[in-house]
Amino acid sequence: MNCRKSNEEELVKLKIKNEELKMEDGMSKENIIQNKSYDFALRIIKLNQMMVNDQKEYVLSKQILKSGTSVGANVEEAIGGQSRKDFRAKIFIAYKEARETHYWLRLLRDSSLISKKLANSLLKSAKN
Image: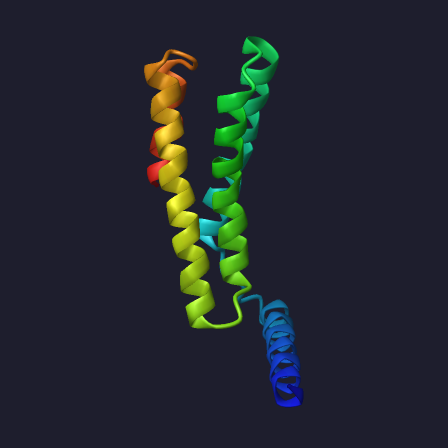
């Protein structure tokens, strides 16, 4: 147990040092997946607000809110993963959440709860 704690502490120290080095030399790279999933989550939140406020739709709007914002949350968890295995597991969860969101968007579009234009725009974002 003590050895495990020591390894975890060492990992945290390495991550902190890595972040400090990035700040010093300005080599911090933009994470496209992180940014796109965050922007997508913001769009999903706005969709949820529109559906609740304008249509008084609470069930499906909650489903898409959960899956659509979970994509970015799992990407963030993957970035902070403790191992490659942990990273892969979290990224795969993000992928599954994106597929679920894709399903809900198609359902909302095909049931005419949201416009085809809005749905297709969000679907395009979900695929990219």
